[in-house]
Length: 223
Length: 223
DNA sequence: TAGATTGTTAATCGATTAACAATC
DNA sequence: TAGATTGTTAATCGATTAACAATC
Image 1 (tube, rainbow over the protein chains, first blue to last red):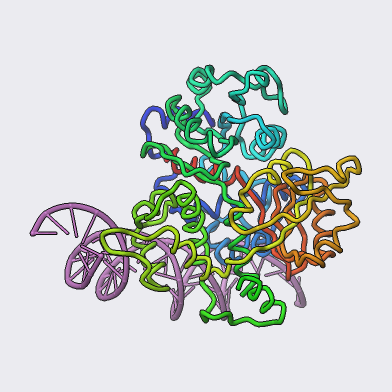
Image 2: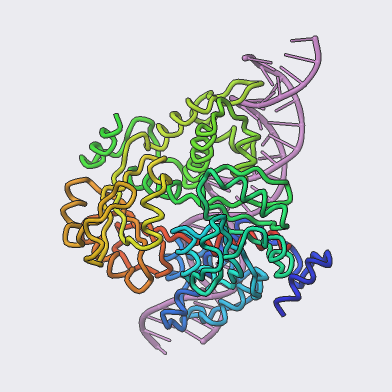
């Protein structure tokens, strides 16, 4: 099932079933619903109302019902949405039902924290390898993932169909590592450093920015 | 200057100079411009065009010029914006020129990574204390910040005017720590765990969700 | 002058919200 | 039945974009 999506893409297929591409806004919101739903499921919740989803996502409840009803009648009036089935529906819509292999660069504090947590695994992202320039770390394991030598990067990316690279290295090393990831064929870079990265147009960089999020939250507290 | 803002707020003042509150969208975008500008400044850039800002933020360049021109004529035609002065202008608009004291909870891998990095310091957030339930860690220093005993939390929050608490603890401990932070008087919680947190209505929770961001980026890669 | 880039307009599109009938 | 919550409409508001004169 899930491999088909990747296979289709490789084959140049664009229309994968449901027709048109989602708008940026809808895709972003569906992703957030999914996060809350997965967590709610972990907590043993069977059903959830649009109102509850609104509280956790800070998205208006009417907007949530509107977004969901655009794809089908997933809810039950007077009850809410079944958590289980809604997770599956949204995954189907986002084409994220499958497993995706990712690589992690940097085995310092941050890299270890990421490797040991299940934040990525919970959403279908499997870390297949950690890379670090420090030879002493090569061969060690963090959270069941082995640290590999940098030289293995192209092989791993190629053989394991890796599309995403997570960058957990100091700012000074970020551009160099990004270049290596691009050369190896990675198409999405998740940047935990603050460095502004230069990449070719077919590569997407997403920079994590907790302080910016905080600034934003603080503005609304201060006003 | 900057302390006045906080002081005003404490005194219940709402109108701080420029008049109306920004819309959610404008505030979010200005925060992102600021992040890129600060980084660009570090890299020694003097001026930046709306086109360059667009590349780094993924926000349309017309939108950027529009956002900025709403507050004044900050740019120079044919040249772009001066990085230095634009940083100051946006900080003024966002009322974030000052320093804000924050506390960090959790001195594990993630907590140490946060304490040692300057991602928060660069944006005017100073970590005044780290807390951890593990007594062995109390008294140790990470990145010039000392680990305190949990019992000191209320005092630190009160004496240092702490509004923001950063949560870098395992999911299982997150709700308990959130409760402590709320009791101590923290108003904004930055949650790095996946736990869905229950807080009073006057407290804002922001949950970090790298996997969700990735899901979203991947959707646009797959389609 | 020539090239670049801002500031601004106008037109379109999508997001947001309140309200409420349908129905579990 | 009574209460709750969805699905949907209609009306408004803000975001987005192309285009271009102004001007550095």
